[in-house]
Image 1 (cartoon, rainbow, N blue to C red):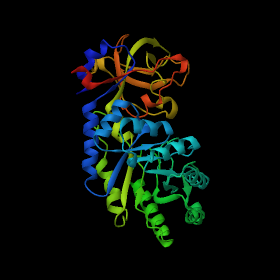
Image 2: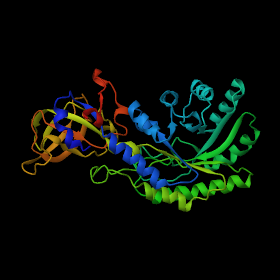
Image 3: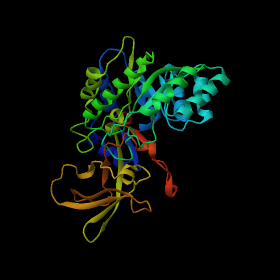
Image 4: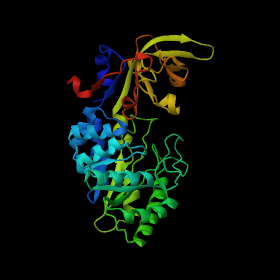
Length: 388
């Protein structure tokens, strides 16, 4: 259901709130599965993108696995009904308590990010008597050329072990008694639009696999992470990410051995475009070079523009068909921080107090990163099928 269809409903609801187009979410996941096709493949949904319970239930209904980066995410996956045998647990700072919890649930695998972590896993596995499965997260030193805060595959990032460290890891792995080595894991960053970066990742992946084969490791699982970007500039025209191009890069270039399963960890590309942050205009405040459009939503509801200076398409739903009287605005929130701005010098139809705005592509890293700074309430979630 188009976001414009519900403008009258929005006027009667207290803002701000997150609005989710359920039909678009379902269509997006279906398109991803169709693009991937049949084969030894498994998609794990990255909980960090959006862990709203209704969103998770929709994801689960399509049979996706779970990619978790905290113990609480693992717990929510279990509570939601995800099969423990399809749950992966990544993250550079897993606590002993979280590891034990993952062991107790007998999740599919831990993505190990350091040699010291591997030693801890071996120790805890021995103490609990639970056999632990793990994949080594390799840092392939591939520059995804995305924002510096969301690149994860370069040598100076905190994630994974380097190719040089892999040689040190091999004798350690051979000495393990309780932990079972089942695969290799990669993730080079987020919001990647240049698919050639994934080809670089594939080359590194093939290289690592050849090295491990030389040491007689024939692993049943390869996990290439996620990172596929979306179109923040034109969310209506390009509501579905380029899943075919993304998956084809791996299917055509990655050397899969017989009986190997290829795993993907998609988050943003599945849920971002289905979500919008709906806000109301509180004040228009003239300034020297622009006018401040002050909303009742701020960085507490969507931190990405303040954190990354990221762009989100913004539209005035109260006058979305108007092409006259455009004005340049700084679209800002009510939070007591100068960085609390969604856009600077943005041309929009002339806007007045009480108008309803939609900040698009907020389905990923919107609600899940919300805070109560300034003692604000966490904004509620509204779904398109609530209006049926």
